[in-house]
Length: 380
Image 1: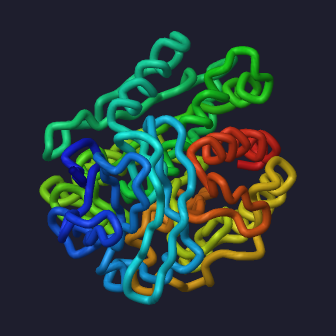
Image 2: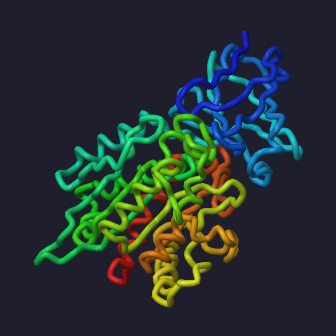
């Protein structure tokens, strides 16, 4: 018997009718306390060697329908190895066609990053070296630990204060590529034999929040936390009641300072890796301009997966600008501040159709950010 389920970590889908393998009817489920809908993650069982057609009927009413053209869903038989499957969009319905070769398989909007893997990430980090410290900034409304990793000692030789580098990821929980990115960054930064990591830690202390939105991640939300807040619109006036996650991070930033900030995201529509800076801020300084240009040049040299031709237009967010993490931090600390965006689809300049942009490629991009940072660390 065919069965569609999503009652698990980051699971999300509504089943309309699963009685006919040739016409499995589904709908995107909205975030628990908002109207955002785009993320899906579900399990199909009972369809071994059966030609299946799965139709997500309300894709045209999703949060970002422009993200569906040229998009291919991801699937897995073991939840470790994910691949792309045939997917079509007609302007209203997203249709996935596949013939499972086992009794059960999973489908998702992007390769998931589980809360269990997050726990492993934290455990690996804090046991890597004595100069890695875990700070629990708070407990989320759903009862999840809200973790900050401080990597490095705060003062160098002769008591000189080091640069404070902040990395936050997954303000939008459905953008799971962001935590894959952080995993790659941490693996490199915590490798005692990596010369770039060792050189950076002589000059810098890293403050890393691998998951800014644990509640939304576990609930299977696309964009919001348990209270219905889009965290990347909360930075100007966060509250403990609505957006505690941003409130805690802002407090810590104001306590220790920020010299560079990278906020890691995914973009539904643009099939490229790119960055968005603080050009729209009235306070945008010549110093910030020069830092941004130097960093882009350095990342282009460090990773062929990065590019600067495609991205957001300046002024895209209008009056919301200073509610975004990158723009608020850049305005508050006059520092290098960038949003990093990765695709849900593939990279148009260097595609890998079998897997598209995926977790492994995200980890490699995360690692490469450190090479770019090393090239400009003296300027920060």
